Image 1 (cartoon, rainbow, N blue to C red):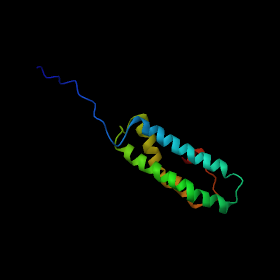
Image 2 (image 1 turned 180 degrees about the vertical axis):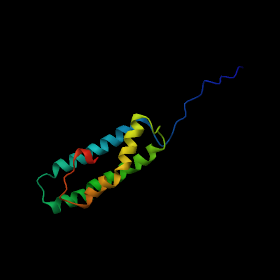
Image 3 (image 1 turned 60 degrees about the vertical axis):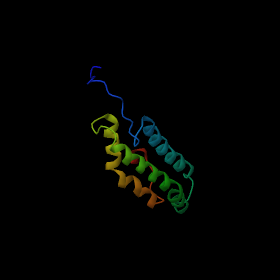
Image 4 (image 1 turned 90 degrees about the horizontal axis):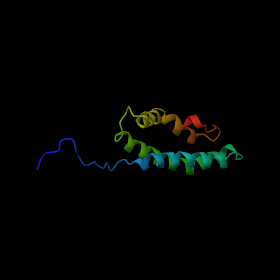
Length: 108
């Protein structure tokens, strides 16, 4: 049987799948939904909601992000987007520590 050098079975990477990008996107959208429900709250109440609900989602996003960073090509469009997300992560997390700061699209 001849040796097929160019044909290889695709390797499944358990850390990443195309649907993981959609999961990250959905999680980010959940934060925007939470924020839209908080528009008329006092800063103290808004802070409580952020710490109770948004923080949990941010932890999930960070876990997905860290898995994905090592499973995609860094120079691909998606790899660049993930590295941008990671590069400004501290700014994205900082908003849950304050109930006054608006959560804007550029933040996440």
